Amino acid sequence: MYKFFFKRIIDFVLALLGLCLLSPLFIVVTIGLYIANQGKPFFFQFRPGLNGVIFKIIKFKTMNDKKDHDGNLLSDDYRLTNIGKFVRKTSLDEIPQLLNVLKGDMSLIGPRPLLPEYLPLYNNIQCRRHEVKPGITGWAQVNGRNAISWEKKFEYDVWYVNHVSLILDIKIYFLTLKKVFLREGINMEGQVTTEAFKGNN
Image 1 (tube, helix red, strand yellow):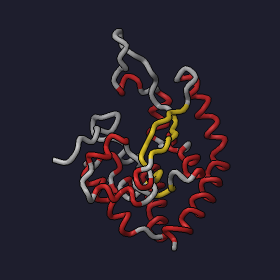
Image 2 (tube, one colour; image 1 turned 90 degrees about the vertical axis):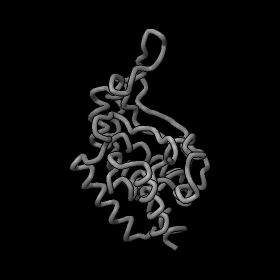
Image 3 (cartoon, rainbow, N blue to C red; image 1 turned 180 degrees about the vertical axis):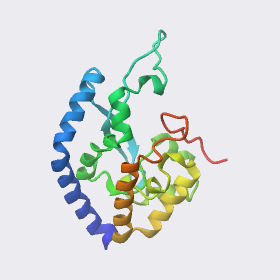
Image 4 (cartoon, rainbow, N blue to C red; image 1 turned 120 degrees about the vertical axis):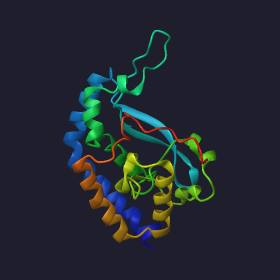
């Protein structure tokens, strides 16, 4: 009952409340990123959601679009702006996804939505991460976030699918607050962004 009914109600109410409470911060960050990114404060990208259905995710844009002499984008560490570093370290880049939660594309708690090109790379067990809506935070995020291997992340995602409950979601919520406060596991050592998933060996 919780997984198929009450979870959606709780998501909607908390997302709406969160947007209201965080609206001053939302506005300040939007203005800062608008200036830093030449009028582009938001980042839109297609991601697979429940049952692999594609939706458009919205995040704060932490990297600019600077290119080299050949017209190719510079590496991530060169394009990450100063305000972008702060927004990413404090996980403020996730705030706009509350809009995705209100629309019903996402949940507050669930496996993180990844790239569509990863879909054919999953094995049969890893595919089960799409049996629930993707989340802003999840079991993998509070157990290592981007500092653990892809295989471990998927293990945690599928474990969550098998154990969805109100008590577990509350636990993940408070563990997420702890992770954000301590700024743990934002990236793998020596990397600005997460290494791409290339499939199972």
